[in-house]
Length: 358
Ligand code: SF4
Image 1 (tube, rainbow, N blue to C red):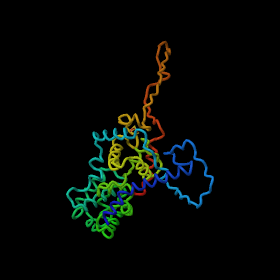
Image 2: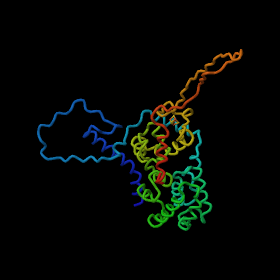
Image 3: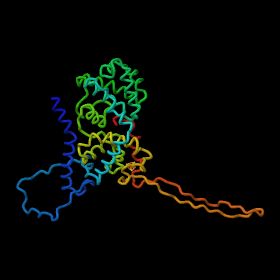
């Protein structure tokens, strides 16, 4: 039974994509206003119209109006070159996620169930919180809770005390409440373990798709979908890999999964998160030192403005003086080439603060 649910979860994202492709194909043949991402070319000459009525009425399949259909896209041009350049760059550039990301926070050598539980708690604490702060909070729980960080110690601890332990992370009071609720659900409904399906994980309070897919990857070693956080969302849009800038991260996941080979679904999260922490920053991306600036449609350039210095000779009280009447100098001004102003991506980051599922 458990093996079956694991298989189901592994094929979940794949089946969504397959379903989407089928739907998109039906749509393009029945409507001219299909997706702007893929439009199959029409046949060179239309087939002759049938003269006879069909003997029996064939009911046309109903095409569901699904947001997934409009989000599927063809692979962006040169994505592989850009992907490999960022991957190579990240091999030599250390970012906070590499040492303090949720993948690194569960303790080594603990039983598998405890490892998975610690991973889930780390992910819940990490929402809208810096890696350094999350890492410190997890370490406090691991060292301060009697018996360490595990299901039993979370069930036993008072919610207010738990809130105190994690007070450095964003929305700590809400998170303490969610963590207590999750512990009870895991005890009562999941035999004390974390669910091994995305459906089971996102049912838990305070757990959304990003955490769910990352939990499957880290805790269960299952590659069921891309974990899209603010960095993956922002950078994918800046690179032109997605057109979901003003939409939800779930839309970014769906669009990325429609063309990115599955073998990259796991590594793209830590790769882009680290890239976003050190180079493609939310505000003031360091485009000048970016390895993909020649390919990026959002690359910032420095525009030189020239100013002229005009000096004038004047005679005052028999003395000749030189005064400056107009001074212009060269100065740099950063401009973005495309419409991907970083503030737009930030707008999503800041306005989506209330739900803690990111
Ligand atoms: S060129 Fe600038 S905006 Fe584009 S990926 Fe690099 S840092 Fe980000």
